[in-house]
Amino acid sequence: MIATVNPCGFAMLPAYLSYFLGIEQGTASTPTMATMRALRVTAAVSSGFLGLFAAAGSIVSWTSFSVGEISPWLTIGIGVTLVVTGVAFIAGWQPKLGLPRLDKKGAGRSLWSMFVFGVSYAVASLSCTVGPFVAVVATTFSRSSIASGMLTFGAYGVGMSLLLGVITVGLVMARGALVRHLRAVLPHVHRASGFVMALMGAYLAWYGVYEIRLIAQGQASPTRGPVGLMTGWSATLSDLLSRFDAPRAGWVLMLVLLLAMLGRVQPVIATAAW
Image (tube, rainbow, N blue to C red; front, side, top):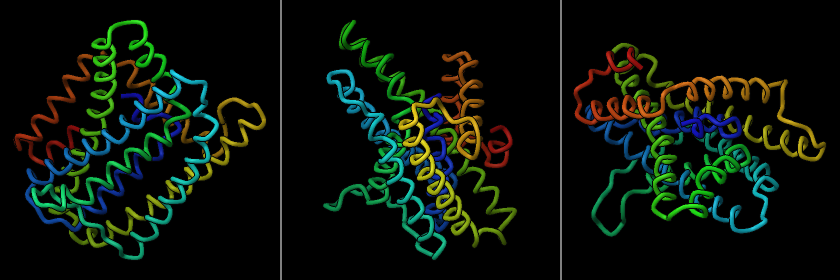
């Protein structure tokens, strides 16, 4: 769960939610359909995140390659991409969230784009979380059985996916309340999402530059300025999550998602509970 709010990729969380809200904004559907769509998107983003971490963890644990040396440059590239996408949203570009189909065209371009977004999330998070990931997951494969390693990786993935899924479903339910109570604001939601994406992209690009400067100067983590502020917020959330009883937190998150899937939770009540 802490991997979702890591200091390096923390800006990707509001960028992801803004992107999803932007593509969801123009889609008319029932609350149940919107919730199922949110779960599919969560699965796509989580798969991209975990797939890249599995590859990066294997490279780091089996070779002497240092991911930290290139991750700041990749973060800059992701930041610039988010800025461009955010500006496109502000200009009126509206990508559609495709639903899985059984025809020759496959499962829809948007779910693939969310998978790529998950890969980007992981790339931005690499320098902060690949070390703990390798220490906890990769060493389990080498010191114990393959089955034990797979279970450890699965637990890592479930924790990351559950938290991301609950946040995404909560956003969908909050949007349902907005549709009923704030219809006058809805035409501006898409452009507002683009603004948040562009802002978070600019921050990520600056974070990459900041990280490169820290590496060159041999300094520790940033403690001031926008980067220090965002890192502090991330650390606060990480500390909060680390104090939870892990099994209990996992069951609670699963219960929330199960209720959402069954369509038993009314949007306003669920939003207030979240």
